[in-house]
Image (cartoon, rainbow, N blue to C red):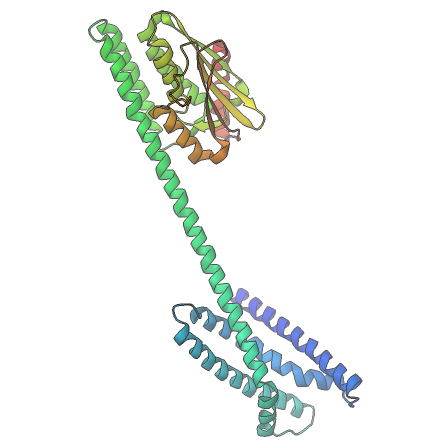
Length: 381
C-alpha cells in the first residue's frame, strides 16, 4: 500500500516536472531568441518549475474532488457553481504555494525578492491559466469517474444477463424432466395389464434413469459419451416396449466422445423418432443415431424410416415441446452457433440434426471419462 502510494506520487512529480521543463524551454527560447533578453535556462526553470510542481500536489486532490462532485444533468445547477467556487480557491491557493516556492528558490540563489509583489504579479499572469488547468483536471477526473461507472454498469448488466440466461436454461431443462417422465409412464401404463413383468422391469429402468437425472440436475453440459450412455439406458426401456420392432443403429465417431454437449440433448430427438416412427406402425422401425465432427463443429443426428414430418398448410414443420425446448437451449448456450434442423431423411422418414461448436473438455477428468466410452461406442457401430 505504501509502495503504491509512493509510486503514484513519483509518477505525478515526474509528469509535472516534465511539463515544467517543457514550458521552461519554451520560455527560454522566447526570451533569448525572440525578445533578445539576457536570460539563462536556469532562470527559465526557476520561473516555471514551481508552477507545475505545485500542481503535482494539488492535482490528486482536484481529481478526488471532481469524482465526488461531478456535474451532471440532475445536479448542474448546484454542482457547477460549487465547482467554479472551488476552482477559484484552488487557483488562488496555487498562486500562494507557487510564489512561496519561487521566492525561496530565488533567495537560495542569493537574490532578494518581495513576496507580496511577486504574488500580485503571479495572480495577474497565471490566475486565469490556473483556472483553465483546474477545469481541465476536474474534467478529466469527472470523465474517468463516469467511464468507470459506465464499465461497472456494463459489468453488472452482463452478470445479470448471464444469471438470467442460466435461469432460462435451468427452466428449459426442468421442462424436459416431466415431459420425459410423463411419456415414459404412459408407455408403462399401456403394458401394466398386458405384461405386468415387463412393466415392472420398465419401472426399474425408469427409476435408474431418474437417478441419473437428479444427479445432473444442475449440469448444463456433459461429455457426449455420458449422454450416449443415458440414451442407451433410455432405449433399453423402450426396447422392452417395442420388442423386435425397434432396431437402433449407432454411428458414433470415438474421437468426439469427450466433447461437451447439452445434457438431455439427444433424448427429445430419439423420443420424437420413436413416437412418430415406431409407435404408429406395427412393423419394424429403424432409428439411426450419429455423432461426428464437422469442421470446428459437432454434428449429432437422429433419423428414422417412418412416415416423416407432417407439414402444416404453410409447409413448415410444427415442433412439439421437446424439439422447441431443445432449440431454445441451443440458442441460449451457443447463440447462432447452435442449430437444430428438421429435414426428411434420405429414403424416407424424418431426420433431426443438432450442430454445436466442438470444444475441448473442460478438464482432464472429462477427457478420461469420454475416452472410457470409446470401446462401448465401437461395439455399437
